[in-house]
Length: 335
Image (cartoon, rainbow, N blue to C red):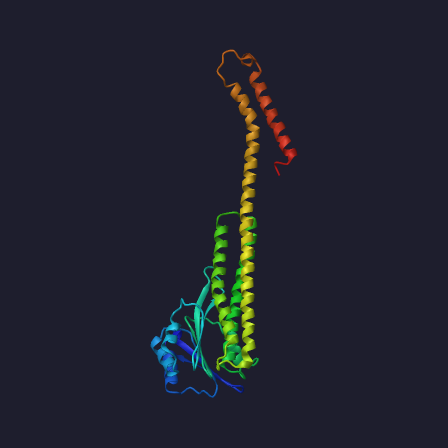
């Protein structure tokens, strides 16, 4: 078996049992090409990597998948979309996962091919989005083993939307922490942290908005590959997308509020500094005035020949300072 990054897994299941097999891309490509896959059950083949392009193309061609659809798997910058063909349905989506480092949003493209009794999913890298789906299959939870591959697609998309909610929860916690931090600190790093969270929200919105549109298409689709009885479940996905978008907007508003709070605190801090400078200036202006008068070089100044003139002037200046300090304190300027 080749390196684990090229490992794929296949679930074959029906109501009574399931079979899980793990192997390389080339192994499953050969099985599909030689019709060794049992299609009397629902088949879910999941790729944790798309590096083995040659084997993936071989597998897709054995299922009569169009070359343009195969190319779409590798177009990671394309907008999420859904395309209906005679024998299969192509669906692409961008996923997002919580990122403990708090840096950029961790995302990747995931592509699906939905056939009459199979679903193939392609992940760009090894990341586990579908733990809950595997658990449902293995423990026979809910209706997944009595439904077709279209219901499996619904559960997988539901798991991805759940990941969006996890990302939102992580961002929401960072927003709360930012608000607390902003109340205690007014350094320039605060704005940088706010802008970083805003960028993540914008990225997440760019991912979720197209998914909202495509799930709406799935809900209204007349494709024979989607059972009419399962159309209602895709409306749940649409509601999930709308909820995520609402959470995104709520957090953006909170971040705008924190930004306003930051500038308000900066202004308050500046006002405190200006007030203190005003107090100091107000105390020293009369003292400077007195010192300026007696600093003039005129020969005939009445107080120059006074024995206690120097000490009297110092006492006068001290009294003025004390009186001003008492006045400012009563006015509450030192609070």
